[in-house]
Length: 311
Image (cartoon, rainbow, N blue to C red; front, side):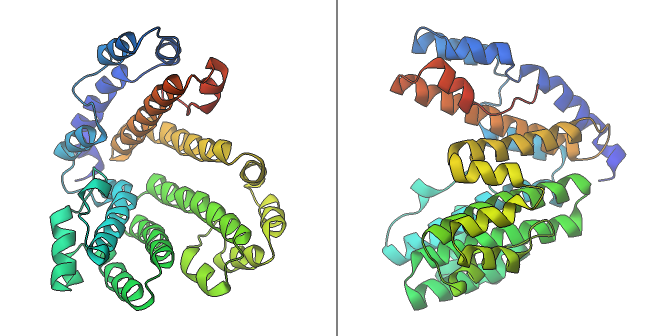
């Protein structure tokens, strides 16, 4: 589809944005006196797209062949690859660990491993599936296999973004990779992981060089923070060290800010992708409020944990 052909889709998304939760809505939800009142407030803003899978089906109905849009689900696809692979090795069923929405069905993933034929999978995950199977069966190291698949997902995102995407999806893929690599390098430094493990676990990007991150991680946690402080991600480095939960929130908020810019484009797939990201953040906020209410968390703490709103 050409950019102009998304005009109807963009108009539909603009209309649906009016159903997104606002700051006022969030305040009412946090202060809801009962669970029934909470559910009533949420229901009042629903427009049929209750889950991310609902949202995804709607967006794909407007852009069924968009390779660019599919990149948003690569993380889910590779998570599901991990679930099926580990379930196969352990003799369990993977359905309980499967994430939706996804580009690749659980049946196709199971069939690929049953037949030992990764060629039936989408091109962006074929090599990863084959190598991950070999790695796990050879080493029986689930952590190493998981790290390899996670890193491969980021590599696939960046590669497909360069091949199919515009500026927005390229920046999105890079930002997701940066956040993941920062966490990985820091976590591995605390666990004193070897260079061999880091070579598998760290992806690297134009923004954060892989070899530089590995060297910093091998030097310990202070080395990682010192390296990151001299990049454009200095503020994130401070949060990573002092408050991991706030680091996660900062990463999510940066992605929402990126989506806000894409939202303003009149044509193309960008507003559709931005709306999906907005719903993803909204559902995460609802989960945060719900869990915090159940645990008796105070209002100030709940407010601090909430992700940036799109509207």
